[in-house]
Length: 148
Picture 1: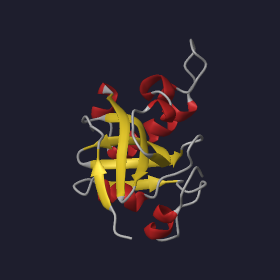
Picture 2 (picture 1 turned 90 degrees about the horizontal axis):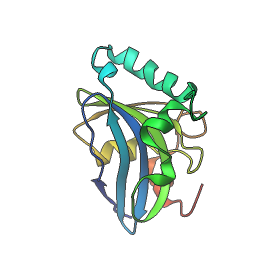
Picture 3 (picture 1 turned 180 degrees about the vertical axis):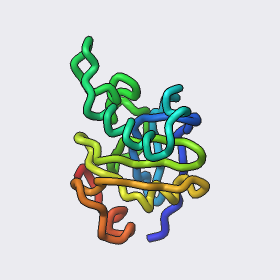
């Protein structure tokens, strides 16, 4: 099957947030909520990736949830249409994006699908596909129907 890929997410410079991939017939759609963080601008790219990891581990003292959820909400709160294929967390800067871990609710995203949705951006990733990297071709990921 031939798919088209579309981006429906805004990527402010120096931002962190959450992404989901959706499938609508023969369209693969990228949605997300990314929020600019001033502190990311002063970090090297490697430090920015480490900061995302910390935001996933650190708890907000007032709300008791991970700081990334305070910043970007939950994957299920991202406005979208069509069935969700998977989700991840991300940091974006200088035409580069780093995808980290699967969504607890939806499972992971295939990095090649994200790359095709945002072809002008270099995609890096870690721990996608059940805390291991996807080894199956993109076509197998896209052929899957329903919740993972």
